[in-house]
Length: 416
Ligand SMILES: NC(=O)c1ccc[n+]([C@@H]2O[C@H](COP(=O)([O-])OP(=O)(O)OC[C@H]3O[C@@H](n4cnc5c(N)ncnc54)[C@H](O)[C@@H]3O)[C@@H](O)[C@H]2O)c1
Image 1 (cartoon, rainbow, N blue to C red):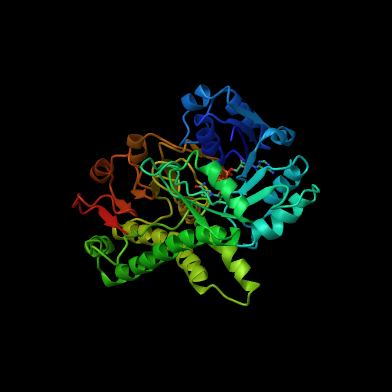
Image 2: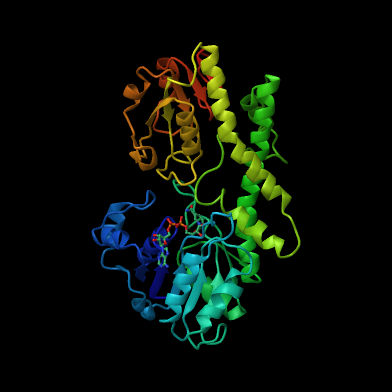
């Protein structure tokens, strides 16, 4: 495989483009966002997991472009466009359909097309295939088609594309074999399933598993709050069981592009089969409650200190959806901030990974500065490069939604 095309150069597509280029492939990297194309051309990465140095080192091998026509040279094309929800929480396949239509216009005999975007079972066969066949080429005969879900965990360094097993399912055996040959270049272990649908559902199972387990421990956190039991102590103790238990930590809710979105792709699809996926709905409901619970907790902590939320200066620490990354998509911190602002609080924040939040016209302030005069420091996302012991010592009052102040037995710290 010497030339690989990648459509959609975001959190998933750009690292993939880099991985194939590092293995010696020529990579045609397509995105409709001209700013991304310019940034790659300038050797400037906008994705935390990809360094600008690595982009510059691969400058001759990654060919960024907004023009689909160049994909005609590729032997394989990987589609990594967003799969969001509509306002009614239904799958929005708009970007995928648009990308597939544009690809169909330049599709070549013998090309392999792989969808990597997370989606409901049936998307590759029922939505992509007919559009690609409008090219006049037949899937499984003239071109190959497969689905292989991306498992990237932004910010993670121990598991990478190379050492994370990659699941794939082809339309035909020959499609799967082509996909195996391709991914074998960048992944050590491939897991072949029988169909694209099985591969599509595998990704959803993984994400739903996380969503449900996070909701379970969050529900317990709301209960232990009333019972006066420390949820962190309980989670810690349960985690000592060497089998049959997997640790999930409570927190202010789920964020990111995946967990709050993907499960609803399946619940939507399930309705066509007269099934209500109750675990998915319930987990979504519980997790969406968490920002409200956290704000109520902050309100109680202020009340006990003789203050109201109205007029209080609240320093939010960490606004991205998870530690070590700058992604604020669906971050529960945004909901928490908007609830606090509605209640009349003055909100400031510190996040070394998020310089500003345009929707609130807020900019990150240095940690020391943000703690000065704050009535409450609210730890929403615990970045590893923030000294939370220092926060616990310096702040007048701390509400810790991540259980990172465990070592500090100060009376001014309240934990979720
Ligand atoms: N971010 C993650 O951690 C992650 C992990 C696993 C799977 N996924 C899935 O991968 C897919 C992509 O996610 P992402 O986080 O990389 O999204 P992203 O928004 O970071 O990147 C998507 C890119 O696609 C581009 N794009 C949109 N429409 C296009 C079109 N018609 N033609 C060409 N480019 C187009 C956008 O400009 C953007 O640069 C989604 O389905 C997501 O659920 C994401």
